[in-house]
Image (cartoon, rainbow, N blue to C red; front, side, top):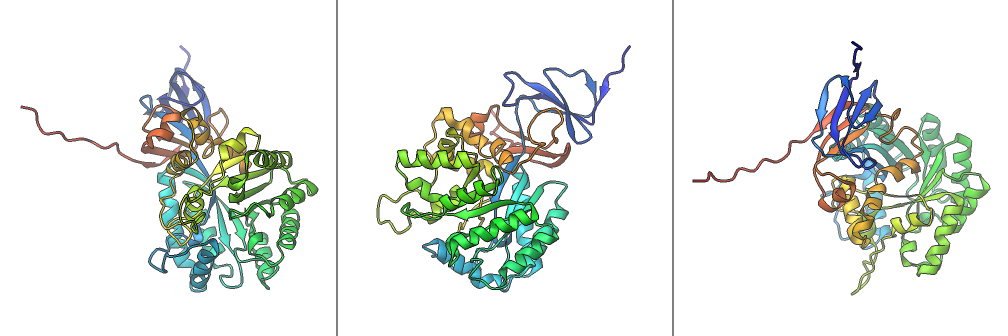
Amino acid sequence: MLARTAFDLVFRNARTRAAAEPVDIAIKGGKIAAIAPTLACEGPEVDADGRLVLAGFVDTHIHLDKACLLGRCGHNHRSVSDAIQAVAAMKRDFTVEDIYARGQKVIERAVTGGTTRMRTHVEIDPRIGLRGYEAIKALKQDYVWALDLSICAFPQEGLTNDPGCEELLVEALRDGADLIGGCPYMDSDPNAQLEKLFDLAQEFDVDVDMHLDFDLDPSWWHLDEVCRQTERRNYQGRVAIGHATKLSALPPEQLKSAAELLAKTGVAVTVLPATDLYLMGRDATHNAPRGLTVAHRLAEHGVLCSVATNNVQNPFTPFGDASLLRMANLYANAAHAAISEFDACLDLVTDLPARLMNLRDYGIEVGNSADLVILDTDSGPNAIAELPDVLAGYKNGRKVFERQRPTLFPPNQV
């Protein structure tokens, strides 16, 4: 009699988005080793009981270094610049320990919300120095058992107008920062900032992820220059822009033209629903615009898009829990997504952001990393509609958290 194959872990009776019927998923050495309707094998088992199993959520844009600042300043900010100024006034006093503690809180909430990959922007400038970077680098190392964290070195308050900032960015990149970001609309010379950012990206062979066009006036923007630089540097597939709220203010034909340019040049777009909805249109007395770029419509035109967290409990967004499932639900609601588009909304926090971050080992396929989460529902559309609990998460096949299903206690029936 032939011996049955032994695995480190086997998920039984798991619903996936790819299969019409439940399947078994076997794990070996931290990788997905087999997927089939019924696997004849040995090893510890997890009964998914017909629930949805996904590859972990991917957060492409968050700010761990300035999270959880409620109570440290007022929250009557009526613009993006107001929020930037509020944080700028505080960050001179941030310590490595303080940033670590606040970032740790958000990471743990994200992990228990099902996130297994994350890209965080970290502010680097003469006011904060490298303290934020050092704290986040420590978090990256300390939480590698639960989360892959990518660090984006980011000058929030400008670059060409901020002496000493470039030298600090270079120091972070030499130390191993994973990519570089920018904020052209805060610079006295936006195009010069973009030129410098792409120069640094090429010098250190890292990707680019920047905040862009964060208002509702489409009469001017920096998107064209980003696309031009991307094409000139052969950086297609390595550039992302966050917010891009000006796109939400375009009529259909202009939006189509912009989408075609983004798709042609391989520039990805990250939509940040909580912050975009909170900060855009605040000067309107009625019929306030949403300021939310409709990512799944851009995706239909071939633009690589994601939906992400951005800020958690600070002047930019004074609420949040780092749950990407909740963010996808919020996005679907605000973007008027049809029920038939709920799967596309789930793509925006799973498969598409994995592509945006150029992750080669993501997804429920044999050979990929066993980064899996179990949701208390049975399909992708229901994950968006129901906002179910994330019951358990696994990183490289190891369980990193578990949440018990609630138990009801009805009165005894006589």
